[in-house]
Image 1 (cartoon, helix red, strand yellow):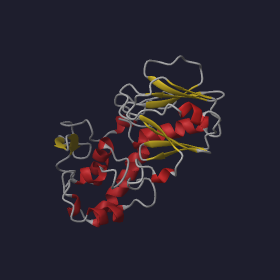
Image 2 (cartoon, one colour):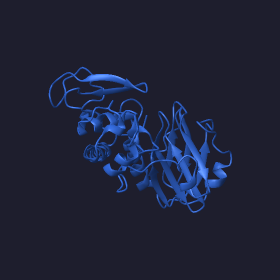
Image 3 (cartoon, one colour):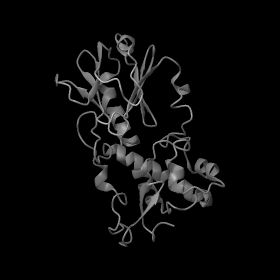
Length: 270
């Protein structure tokens, strides 16, 4: 599934092509996504200019003068800017056409979403209850420490909860906890402030590194220019169960938390 770094990579990739461009046509080939695509979407969008492309959590927000197009990539979706008149493929469900390019939404599993709202985007039902962005200043160790008091949930699940902080998916939770030296099974409420300060720093570092590398490609994600991400080559624990820890060389352990694979070092993480 595309996570925050992949979505941010997509956001940056498409923004340079479509910002300040006017939509000339819209083709909806498959409206049955996670939620039905509005039949009126072409009528709504044609003639509007994209004023900005932003990301909130794993949602892409294309702002126009009349409202916002909210896009979620689901489990296997991608957005690509097509400039060579390439014919649409089997899973290319929506084309947003500009004078010199096409923004093409592809989603083999159809768990993604393309939704329109003319209301203030911050009040949208899918966004209003989300936690802070991990790359912004209002996310820090003090925030995590205060929120976690008396919480018995494992710290890995605590930081993966989008109501607490957005964008820390399974891969990046594994990596950040290893970097911070924290056992992912440890109760969130039993971690000290200094360790949460370290964890917040590590979350920011891991996500920033992944964005720099263009996102992590495991199965389906392809970014806006068709190039895969290379962060997977730097993974320290995720997908490496039984292999030597990069710090102490002991075999990495694996557990299941909320049915998610959790890889950690029982010597380096406590």
